[in-house]
Length: 112
Ligand SMILES: [Zn+2]
Image (tube, rainbow, N blue to C red; front, side, top):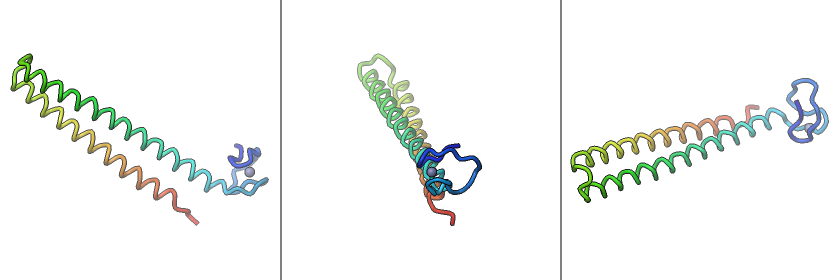
């Protein structure tokens, strides 16, 4: 294991670096917090992409219904199911974002 601050090779697991005195526990906490934020941003972008795709599908079904290409009942059922899946996906993303934020806040607080 190497010190993330000065790259000194650490021989045993300790709370502080022997060379520069960096708090290794705090650095580990910050790294984990940064990783959580990146995961959260990935979830948000996946959510935005899913919303764009599903909204496009709903608009497409409305256009096909208006053209008469698909039956009105089929188009309506598709639009309703797509809207429900949109709500489900958005709910999952909001839930994930809120639980991720709670984890970040818990870990970012110093223990000592
Ligand atoms: Zn160091």
